Structure formats: structure tokens, C-alpha cells
Length: 426
Image 1 (cartoon, rainbow, N blue to C red):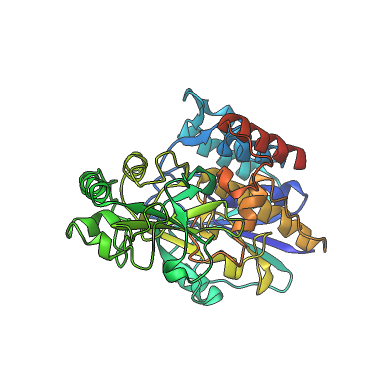
Image 2: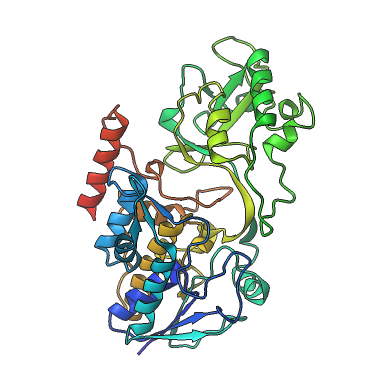
């Protein structure tokens, strides 16, 4: 009989332990609270919601809503609890966060197959008959952080400095153009958004006066210059940095642009592109407003905004299989934001998959890998896609799903079609 251990009682760890227990196996859940709290956590209960009580949109024709519906159909612990603890929030699923955490805690503690041990884990050791799930969150540090780094080598990052990502089909290619610098090939790997002088100066003016997000005491972004901070060094600083136009010719003018924002392919399907060098600490609303001034991005759909803060996560494409197991040791699984999924429900979903696949591993069965047409499946493939370079965390969005063919122009209808296809696949 295999021994199951889960480290961390956040949403991912609770989901993983629940799946194992519901499959009929005993599992030990190790949680450091209340012995120790991270800088972000204050509540002794499990599945603590820190940043927000919103779990994003409820409707099925949204990426967040589709994700939660897939989770519910897979036997999620947290989705039904969240729906029972809901508070009025328009079209979003927002919860009474204390009731939510207390309910999850009570359900975990009362399950006959789950043993909770409150202890600080500082090392990773594995018995021959043990399957381990590490779900320790994005603020993992100290001796356990060092142990994970020893296990994973140089593939653990400590700073989340991510540029915004847009959906490729929302870029106006009448203004933008595909090309690599100096015609070096790979023209579909980059999209270029060219500025004339007036457009550039207006953009920089708005950029330097835009409102930044509040920086908490556990936020760190040393060693990676925010684009708005660079712009404050001088009008031409971005034009000689990430917005340099050298090696490019705008086919609409036949000349080199005054400045240029390059978008680089984010995934192998080419459905998402990131703004190269545009790591930023602007508020999300300000990012939408200011970055929509970039020629070609006036109507861009942002699938992720830029962030800059302290965040521990694995370079998962180099380390993990799509079932969330470690390639170098398939008896070790990771789950939660440490894997590079971003968001409460995304973390919980990864916990479901890790828990299900830990059981399948113990039973000698093939892992459960959902279709790329499913939101959970697409995220699982994203974090394990070896073609992804400059890996950064990703939340649920329709850009990770293969597009509907032929394309449906109405966005709401297109999203509904994507959701229906996903649920049929599931």
C-alpha cells in the first residue's frame, strides 16, 4: 500500500488531499500554520484567501467560469464550498472568505482518510512506498525553499516579473506587422507595433503618469526594470531599450519606425504573444488604458497583465509532466502556484489533477491528462510545454485553447463555443 503525503494546506493542497481521500486512501496533510505564517497569511485555517475574496466570473462563457465548471465535474472540494459561501458580486463568484476557509478546514479535518499534522517542513525526504505532493505556494522560502531548489536545480525562480500577454487574433495587423530584426527569419514569431514620433511621445507621457500598484512589504522586483520606471529616466530611454526600432522596416511606410513594441510568441500554437520588455507595476486598469495606445493594440484582448512581485515558482516546462509529476522522480508531484498556474481556482485545479494522478500512479495506471480543448488540460499542457521560453505564470484564459475554426467573430459567441467544446470533451 502506497503512503500519500501532501505538504501545504492551501487550496491546491486541500484539493489534492481530498482527491486522494475520496479515492479511498489515507493521506497525511502537513501544514505549517499556526506554527509559522508567511508574510501574506494571517488566518490559521486552510485554503486562506489573501488578496481577494473573488474567484472571478461565474458564467460558463468566461475562462474563469469554464475552469470552475470543469473542476466541479471532476469532484472539486473548493468549488461547491465557494458556491455555498457566495456573497453578492454581480457576475462573479465572490465568497465570505472566513466562512469559505472555515468550511474547507472543517471538511478536511472531518474526513476519515485525512490526517492533518501542523508542522514546519524543512526538508524533502521520500520513502520507497511514498508519493509526495508539494503544494507550498508562491511564497515558499527558507529551508524548504532551499530543499526544493536542491531538488529542481536552477529551475526555481524567486521573482515574478512578467510582461502583459495579448491574444494574437486581437492584434490589428493592418497597423502591426510580422518580422524579425534584420530579416533573420521566423517572421511569425514576432509581431511589431510601430510608432511615429507623435504617437511615441504621447504614449510615453501617459506611461510615466500612470498609476502604479501598491507595493507590499513582501513584494520584490529588484534586478528587472519596470517599463514605466525606464521611461522616467528620459524620453528616449525606452526607444533605446525594449522599444528600439533597429533592424525593422514598417511595410506600411517603407521606413524604420520611430519606435517599436515587439510582441513575441508565447506558446507553440501562436495564439498568445507577450509584450517584450514590458514588465510593469502599473495597475491592471492602467495597463489596459495605456498599452491600448500602442499601434495595433487598440482593441487587444489581454489574457494576462504584467506583474512584478515576490513569487516562487518552478520553470515547470523543464521539470514537470502534464500530470504535474516531476520528470526526474514521478513519485513527486507539485501543485498550486508554485507550478506556474496563476490564481486561486487555477491552483485548486492543479491540486485536483495532482491528487487524481498520485492515486493513478499508486495503482499503476496511466496518468489522467485532459484534452487541450479543456481549460484545465490546456493549463496542464502550458506548464509542461518544453517549447515555452521565458516561462511565466499563467491563469485561465481563452488564449490557451486551440481556436474555433472557422473563426466566430462575435466574442461572446466564440467564447460560448469554446466552452461548449471543452465541456463536451470533458
